[in-house]
Image (cartoon, rainbow, N blue to C red; front, top):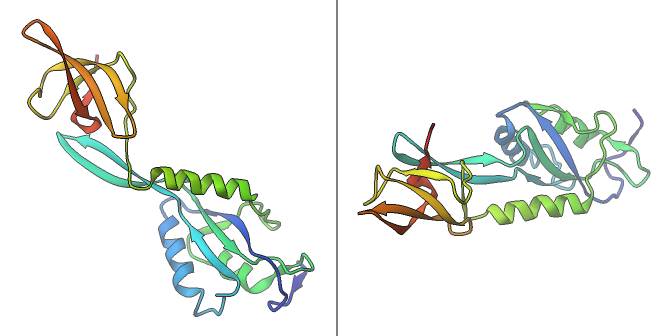
Length: 193
């Protein structure tokens, strides 16, 4: 594999790293922690692990967890090639040898991601930032059981869905009349048949 000197000026590009399942955080943290010790601050700039917060209800209790948008992948902005288009050894081997890294997407000839791909990833991160996404997606007309609140144990039909607020408008039959009730996603569950 032809190489170039690490001092060759070049521009940083984004690459995708394939990681072992469940090792994404470990890989990201290791690279960020040890890039300075390995004197790679001028070669490795940003490590990106896109996530979103997901909520679900188990046994009547709401829980939230962080879910990876791209499981098994970490994105890294780095200088991997010199201006002569030759691979730079030091950052290449540092990243490849991180425990949990399978390798660069593209193998021995990693291809940089297009800026539009990184922009799309960042847009997904921004869209998920500060919002809880329900693990279960509902549709209008679907029958649900209410698990929490004043109408617990009743069933109703979904009339409206507001994904931005995480709310559902559910019609519940009370005393023979349908009454609209606003509930959060986590307060209902699908009626099993």
